[in-house]
Image (tube, rainbow, N blue to C red; front, side, top):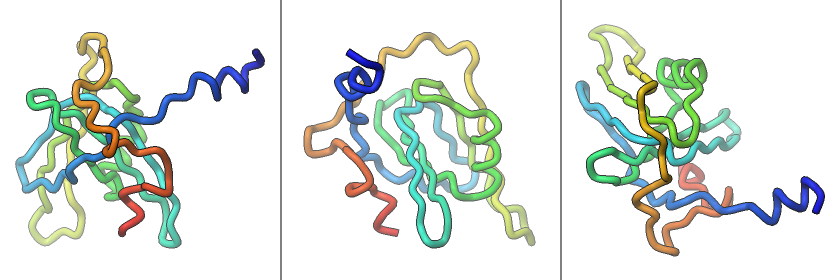
Length: 136
């Protein structure tokens, strides 16, 4: 079997993308594993988001990565699927137009066996036609 055929044969669709949108207030944070990262091109630009499986509840949250501060941190640290990350939303400084986030990767995180919350068959995201960002 050639490499291309093998990649098709071994393809598995991403796990549940039926994630609740993370809409933090200043001071809120989330710690968990990166389940997936998606990008989609729109007329206005690239929309990128990550699904994080929260450590304590195993609930999936969609974290939008459009704002410059969080996008820059994400691109610099480059967390991968399975990385244990912490994201804190620090809010919008008074009189400023930007929002402050803090993103970190846990270098001491143990190996990851994959998502604990795999969702129902109806909750699985198979591609751009189903993209939750498409509603924007």
